[in-house]
Image 1 (cartoon, helix red, strand yellow):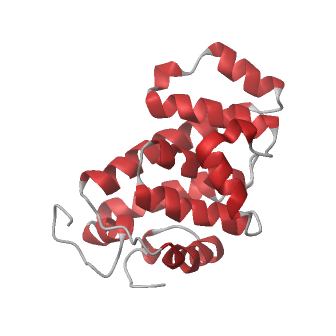
Image 2 (cartoon, rainbow, N blue to C red):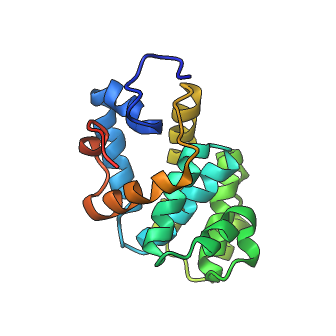
Length: 185
């Protein structure tokens, strides 16, 4: 049960953003800028980082909703998304993405956990400064988003089939406060 009174028809972060449209707008804009860009990493790779960090943070709603988005972008490859959650080092993804997930996992523990060797490894695998920047910022933002969702005990659907329609909608229409204000799939 949520710690504050929110619209029970909107699960997870959607209910919190509807509760506070003033903060929803910049948070939606941040998600849009970080996750839907194709500058460097693909949206699918970006969603995999969001999924992985949310999984590490044990945020059920976020790791399932962003996992579905990653799955959507990756042509329905749910097995790959699950592999990244549980052990990205053995997942069939690029060495560059593995290096960026390593950095993201360290950011999840604390920003100072990222070492020059981690950054150099990512560069040696083909990551640009933009890729490294975005991986760190996605990880940091998802620590905030995860704590927002769980800190206010927002409700998360346990029926995993409900996440797919929302993922498709976000992939097609984008992030932003407009998707949080109304009941949708």
